[in-house]
Length: 186
Image (cartoon, rainbow, N blue to C red; front, side, top):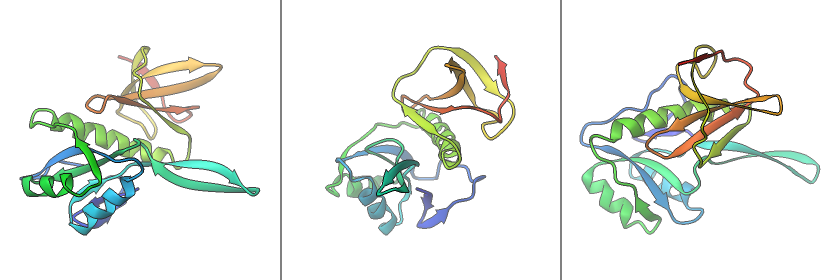
């Protein structure tokens, strides 16, 4: 799902999420299967929002069906001013809002920009969202679509997996069969 900024659809792959004056980015945890409803609510109120998705592939009646599903089940990311915060909390769609301070917001914004890279990557190759942080070799990716990201490499069964940790969110994103990256130990 693309990023909406003041109800404008942003699909530009070079667009970077940034902090906004008088607003703060928050991970908002919604009630079960309410991510798209919360996104619609935010867009209708002209609230800057982001619902990252990955494509789920399945076979139905012999046809391949691709459905975008939320990357982080239950989470929508909203950039809220104080007055919008209350409207979102009382919408009936929200189970909770993670606390973000002025000190932690830059880490969240950095994570969201990494998520955007993996969301685009998921359109051409498999991307896996993991709730665990694996130990492994720390690397900086120097070439390809993930250039500049720091992560770790896990090699299993002749398949190379690159895992990028999202500091604030406590998740990790992974992609397998990396072809277009060069890894350099830190």
